[in-house]
Figure 1 (cartoon, helix red, strand yellow):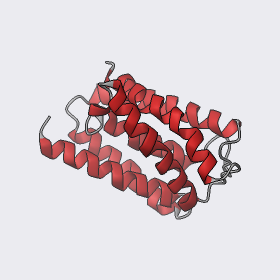
Figure 2 (tube, helix red, strand yellow):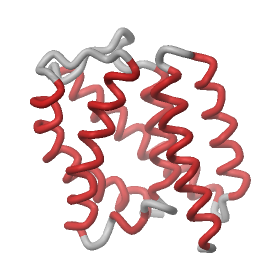
Figure 3 (spheres, one colour):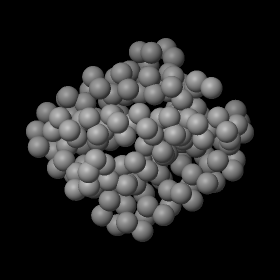
Length: 162
């Protein structure tokens, strides 16, 4: 995969994350996500495989966040999940076969990045998106460490399945 595609994909992940999280309180920003995903799919070399990946990963991710919400780790206004969070799963899924593919093997590498990045993204995003963390940010963050240590490398492997 060309380096410029990987860089563009990594930048898209950042722009998409911010659009989704800030879109929780400024909904027009959510319009950037379908536009970004459409551009991603237009440029994606294996479009059909990518669409299946987006759907698979987003379904699993929404189920994971729904479960975490159901056990009280966070509380959303919308049930089971707000639109911005479902869109955020699509954004993440769009990088798993590309700029984040390195996080699938070896397992420990993805686990280390997931253990650090996942909780930080959730706790930081919750503050920006006005999501309640009933257990507080520190406890929530620590509880998310093992979840994301497993989730990131497994999601990459799920994304790389044809």
